[in-house]
Amino acid sequence: MNRFENSAVDTLMPEMPRRQMLAWLGGLACTAAAMPAWAQPAAKRGGVLRIASLANPSSLDPATGGSGYDHTYLWTIYDTLVEWDYESLRTRPGMAEFQFSDQKTLVLNIKPGITFHDGTPCDAAAVKFNLDRNRQDVRSNVKSDLSTIESVNVTGPLQVTVKLNAADVTLPAVLSDRAGMMVSPKAVQALGKDHDRMPVGAGPWKFVSWADNQKVVVARNEKYWRSGLPNIDGIEFSIISDHATALRTVTAGQNDLVYGLSARYKPLIERAKDLSLITSPTLYVHQIYFNWSRGPLSNPKVRQAINFAIDRNSFISAGMGGVGEVAGMYLPSVHWAFDKSVSDLYPHDPERARKLLAESGLGSNVEITIGGWNDQDALRRNEIVMEQLGKVGIRCKFSVATVPEVSGQFFGNEKKFDAMLSAWTGRPDPTMTYLALFSKDSYYNAGRTEASSGISALLLESREKFGQNERKAVFSKLQRLIMEGAYSAPLAFQYDVIGVGPKVKGFKPNLLGKPKLLDASLS
Image (spheres, rainbow, N blue to C red):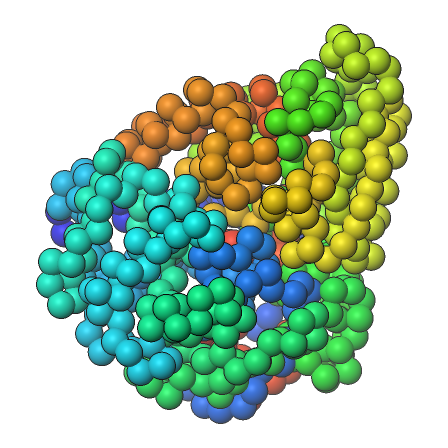
C-alpha cells in the first residue's frame, strides 16, 4: 500500500471516538442482544425477510434515482466498487481493490469471478461502461460526484485506471455510493429507461418485481461472488408510508423489521413483547431545501431570516418525539469535521428574523411555496415550520405528496416550489454532501445555479487535501460560507429507530441510517 492509498483510506474516514459516540447517543442504547464474536451461532441459511419500508423508490437504477430512501433497495441488487465500515464510514475494498498510484491516478483491480444477474461478466470493460455512463449520460444524477474524472481506461482484463483532472481524495468514498454501484451494460443498452424498473446488478439478490407504493421483491443471487452469502433467500419490502401502520405490521408478525421510524415510536417498540429496539446515530438531517434562484429565496436576507425564525429545539421536541440533535450545519457534533462556531450561527431569534425581512425590501409579509411529505409525522413537522415562520411574517403555502413525488416536483424540471421540507440522508464523505447540494449542475441543487464562487473553490480544495486536519480546515471555511449565505436551513439530526422481530438475526445498523442486509439471517 503506497502513501496515497494510506491517505485515502486511513485519514479520510477516521474511527469515531467511543466517548464521543456515546455522548451523541444521549442516553439511547442499542437494546438488541449482543454476544461476543466467539459465542455467535452460525448464521442460518434460507427464508424470506419481510421489511416494512416507509418510501417507494424513485428509481431502481442507481444513476437515475433521486431519493435517499432508495439505497436500502439498491444495496440488495447492486454491489459497489468500494465499501465502508458501518460505524466509521472508513472506506475499504468492495468489488475492487483500489489505490492511488499518484494524486491524479486511481487504479481499480476488480475481483475475479463477479458476474451480473444476466450472466455477463463484471470485468474492466463493464466498470468503464458504468463510470462513463454515470459521469456523461444525460439522465445521470451523479455527474457532480465524478466531476474530477478526466478519463477511464481499461488497463487489463480486470483493471481500470482512472485519470483525474485534479487530485480527489474523496473518489473511493464516491465509489462506495450510487456512482460505484455496477449495473449490467447489456441490460442498460437493451432496456434504456426501462432499466429504472427492471434493474440488473451483481448484488446478493436479483430483482423480481416492483408494484408502485406496494411492494418490491428480490430473490437470492445463486452465483453471488461472496462465498456463503447471502444468508436469506429473498426479501419482500412492503411499502407503508405511515409509521404507526408500518410498526403494527411488525408487532403483528406480518413483517420482520421496520427501519427509519420516528423517535416517538421508541417506547412502543420497547413495550412490545417480541420486538427488539435498535437505535443508532446517523447523518440523516431534516432540513428546508431552498431554490435560491427564484422568488423571495433569491434574497439572502429572506433565507437568513428563515434560519433565525426556526426554533430547532422546539422542532425536535414537537416534531421528533424529543429525540434528535440540533443541526446548524450538515455534520453532527460527533463528526470529525464538525465546527461548533458554524453550528451556532443561527440561534432562535425572531426579532432578528423580522429585522432581516424588513431589510430585504420585500415587505413585512413574504409568501413562499413549500413541498413536503404526506405521512403523519411529516405533516406535523410541516405544521411546526409553518407556525414558526408565520410568527415572523413569512406565510407558507404547503403542498404535500410522497417522498419521491415531492422530490421530483422540486428537483426535477417542474420546479414546483420555492422550498422543500425534506431530509438529507448523508454521504460517506462531506465533500460528496456539499457537491450534491451546492454545485451548479447537481440534481439536488433545484435552481441549477452556483451558490457562490467561493464554494466551488473550496470544494475543489477539499478533494485535493489528503490529511485529515487539512481537510477539516477546508470544511470549516466551506461550511461557514454555506451557512452565512443561508443556502438552506438544516434543522435537526435524526437517530435511527429500528424495530426488529424475533426471527431476525445478525442485523447491523450503520451511520448512514440506510440498512444493508447482507449479514442478516432468519432463525
